[in-house]
Length: 75
Image 1: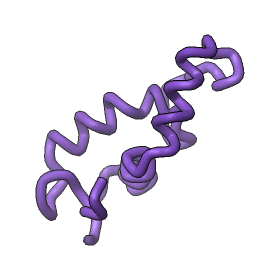
Image 2 (image 1 turned 30 degrees about the vertical axis):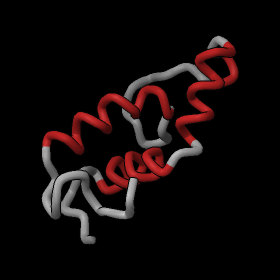
Image 3 (image 1 turned 90 degrees about the horizontal axis):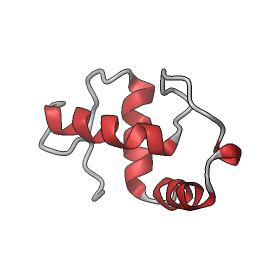
């Protein structure tokens, strides 16, 4: 992520929602609504992928959108 508040301009779009839908199960966000197993019980290769994704700026972007409830985000 390059610091933009949203992926495609200043309005929430389907691209933001799609990215969040794809990444949330892998990031195990604290605000993700689905019941997910703890990281500790996931297979080691999946756990490594999850940890790698969590270290990227995209994880913060997705977390911020979930935390905001996908409401209007200010740049």
